[in-house]
Image 1: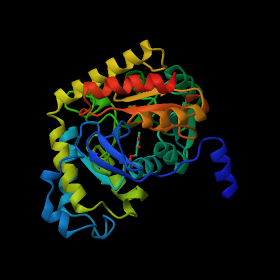
Image 2: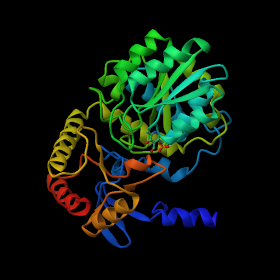
Image 3: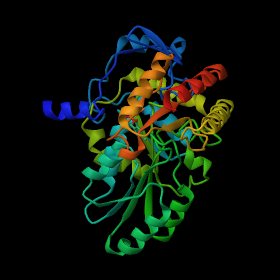
Image 4: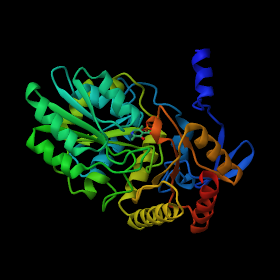
Length: 378
Ligand SMILES: Cc1ncc(COP(=O)(O)O)c(C=O)c1O
């Protein structure tokens, strides 16, 4: 272990956990220094509603005491599931203790021996781990490459009983969006079930904030939809929604659900409250997407490698791990926190500083960060 850690350090890839103190939706303190935080997934600022917390519930129970199928499924968990189903317009929903557990448990329970499972090369680790745990034959396709998916299906589909494709909708590192419309066409033509992870898209895309599937108008054709309570919903936990059969199946066969303690009741109650706010947040959705578009445009006009788009996850590609670390350090000296993203989280040639926007960032803060990035990366 020591040798491997030393090698990671030499390669500028060592990870350390830094104690941080969150002071406001956009301000954190690290090592006694206050920084504007561009490293959180709390896109709509919903993790900050302390005034509304259910203090009695919060004080009385700190844990749920058990796995859900024993005694850890309270009226608050049940209520949260019906709020999720209502918000998403689905027949039913099931809540997991994390988004990670939702992905791992769902994919490994659904895709079985004798099935074919396609997975995007830039999928989140939890989707990848779900594929690894599944007994299906798993094939990784190049990122968002619809032609490659088509070729794989033409070559392999007939040799398998059922076929699944698992993809993030808003990719967590690159901040780009899955080619869902084309994927849905292929799913129709090849009898393939699409499993999407809307972790970063919930709350940010769609007329009611349901995510990228809603924005693409594909709610009737994508059967397995996974989300997390930890990003725009501002809590912690994961969920899957869809048909009653899907939910009943996962409640019985998703091992990360059956064999893990459910989230505390206070979390379930606060998550339900935050979800009920999402559909009314169109102004916030527009604001953050417009801010992203102009931020990206201005950075690329100044010569930085930033793709166009409107998602709140903005990658600024940097040549190497070492340069990414030194740029992140320089940014901190200038008063901002922007995480350095390096392998194995991303491929070797895709090191980046990843800016995550909040609807609470001011124009002035964005302008200052822009100047800081040009200084740190150029
Ligand atoms: C795309 C994606 N899916 C799932 C997860 C896991 O969600 P959670 O943090 O709620 O466990 C993450 C977290 O970073 C993610 O980025």
